Image 1: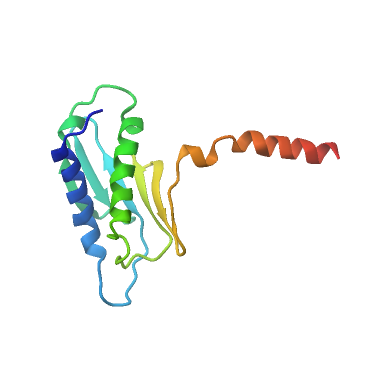
Image 2: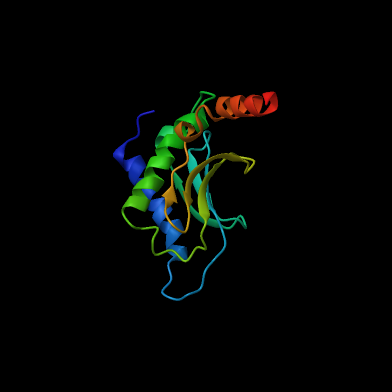
Length: 149
């Protein structure tokens, strides 16, 4: 899916609006994750916290009435790239969120589709399919080797 610059700017603006609620000069920390819920029918991107409190909302024109079944598969890398760009620009360093916290892609039932970004104490881990590729086979081979001994 091709995304216009206007749509990318809308996503970034919605993320920044959501995160501005968690910028603080004090030592107060909040325990929450940030949930991103795109909707293929309305084109809306709703951002909310663990308590289902809406933090931000925007409409992405390319998502309105998206017909294919692969909507979340298509949207995931787009949202992941925008969250990662915020991290790299230093926007996540000044948040008063207790670590570890995550940016999570959720469906219309608020079920987790993918973890877009995990922010931890020491460093930021980007979770993706490449990280876990082949892990099942390696674990199966290891277990088989242990059982044969």
